[in-house]
Each structure stands twice: as structure tokens, then as C-alpha cells.
Image (tube, rainbow, N blue to C red):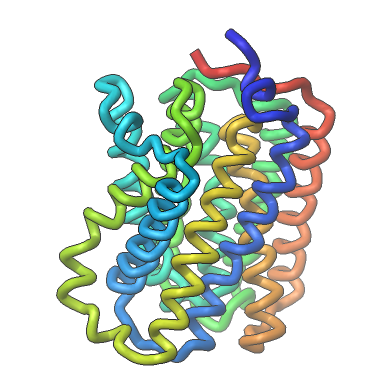
Amino acid sequence: MRPIAHVAGGGRGAGVGPLVLASIIWGTTGTAQAVSHVHASSPVLGAARLLAGSTALAVFARKSGRGAARAAIAWPRQRRWVLSAGIATAVYQAAFFAAVTRTGVALGTLLALGSAPIFCGLLARLLIGERVPPSWATATACAVIGSGLLLLPGAQRSADVLGIALSLLAGACYALYTVSAKRLLGSGAAPLGILVATTGTGAAILLPVLIAGAGELASGAGLLLVGWLGLIATAAGYALFVRGLAVVPSGTAGTLSLAEPLTATLLGTVVLSERWSPSAAGGAALLAIGLVLTASGSQAQRPAQEPA
């Protein structure tokens, strides 16, 4: 099989930048929700984000002449991957926004994306037979220990059990989307077509929720929030993510997603005045170490091969 790098135009190192930038953009979503003072329910907000993002991607695909969403869905062997990615992104939206509402932006994002590398590595191995790179175990260990430090007594004012569970569910959904999209890329599906198909599926799943609660976003602040979440955090963020995923293994992509909770931590501290104990700061530092280790390992590795 030919290397994905030849198709995408670069080796694994070329995929690190887009993945990190996508994660930084995604790290703004919780803070954007908090500063907007828009009191929409998590499912409604997630549904609006997906609908706006998938619509923008579909319009771009049509204008650029590179839309391949229907081709991706039509392939009998790939329908399940499109569906699993669509379900994962739909559930992620509702779980993530509910989690950060209950736990705070920084902690909710750290738990969700701190757990994502573990889920990514396991699911990639189980579902598509992908080997994890050597740096994955070390970086993942940093993520686990860092997340544990964040949950020590005194790290936060209170620990919301349901919020923690929702964060972990969001992390698992992030991983399922990553592995499903990686499988679609390995089968030759066009990246833009994958995005249109998967985000469109997620939007369709949540559409009844949006119809029922659209009034919650009927304000200037609500429209601005949806615009940021849909056009920037979804359309642009997912485009960067899939571009990087084309040349980086799923487990590595999951670890690079640690840039998202680090961004959320910084924004939560600076913008929202969320306070952190020394143990929480140590946990964030370990997450940063895991990110650096993964990025360094990706730069040094040879181009990725298509999954079997």
C-alpha cells in the first residue's frame, strides 16, 4: 500500500501542526459558552454547532467542486464508519457542553481530552488494528497522572460525579470519531467528503433537539456563539483535524489533542478566573509534557502507512 503521506503531501511531522492548531481552536469552546452568557441547554447548543458547521462545510465542498460526501456514504463497507463517526460527534457535543457546565471549563476539558489518548489508542488497536507509536505509552501515562492530580482533594472547589462521567463520555466519543475518520481516510475517501458526511450525520441526529429548543439561541449573543462554534470551532477545526489525521496515527492524534485542555485551562484561569491548586498546576504541566513528547515523536517517525 502506498503511504498516506504521499497522498496528503507530507510525513507525520506535517500532520502535527494542523492537529495542534485544531485542538487550540477547540479549546476555546467552553470559554466561549461561558462568556456569552447564553443559557441554552447542552444538546441544543451542540446541535446548533453541528448544523452550522456541517452546512458551512457542505457549501465549501460544493463551491470548490470537491464534495464527496455522498460517495463516502454510498460505499457499503464504509457506511458503518460514517455512522459511528456521526453518532460520536453528536454525543460528544451534548456530553462535553454539559460536562463543562457542571465541572468548570478547565477541569471538564482536561478530563475529556486527557482521557482521549487512552481511548484512541485502545480503539485504534481494537477496531482498525493500528499499532500505537512508542511515545504513546509515556505521553498517555502523563495524561493519566495529570488528570489524577486534577482530581485530588483541593484541586477544585468540588467534584461533580456526573460532570466527570460526562467528560469521560466525551473523551470516548472523541476517540471513536478519530478512529472512524482515520479508517475512512485509509480507504481513500476525500477528507472534505468525510467531514461533510460525518458532521452532517451528527447534525441530523440532533436536529429534533435543535428544532425543539431553537428559541434558547434566539438572541444576538446566541447567534454569535453559534457562529463561532459552527464556523470556526467546527468547520475550520475539523478541517485542520482531518488534514493532520491523514498522516498521523489515531493514538498520536489523541495525545496531540491535549493542546485543547491546555488552552481551556489557560483561558479558564485568565478569562474566567478559575483557581487552581499546586496539584492542579502539576497536572496541567504533565499534560504539557505528554503533548511535547508526542509532537517530538511524530516529527522523528517515518510516514504513516494506510491501515489494512
